Image (cartoon, rainbow, N blue to C red; front, top):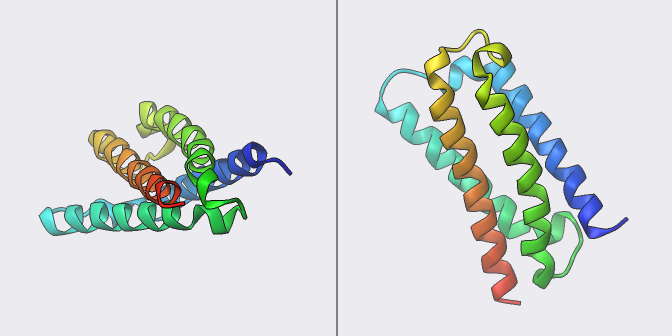
Length: 125
C-alpha cells in the first residue's frame, strides 16, 4: 500500500476516533474551570506530539518521509473536524454550542503538535 493511502486511512481513522470520543464522553472534556481546560490542551499537545514523533513507526515509512505521512494524516482530520465544528450543536447535542471554538482550537492544537513532531523526526533523518 502506498504512503499516501496508508496515511489517509489513518487520518480518517483518527478523525472517527476523535468524533466518537467527543460524542460519547464529550461532557467530561469540557468541565468548568481553568484546570480542566489546561489539562485538555496539555493532553492534546502530548498526544499530538507522540503521534508525530512515532508516525514513521506506525506507518512503517522512513524517518525522512515522516512529515509527508503526517501531512496526509492531518489534512483529512482537520477538514473533517472543521466540518464537524461548523455544525457543533448538531453533532454534539449534549454539549454547549458555545464550545465549538474550544473544540476547533483543541483539534488544531493536536494536529499542529503532530506536524511539529513529524517535522522534528524528518529533519533529524
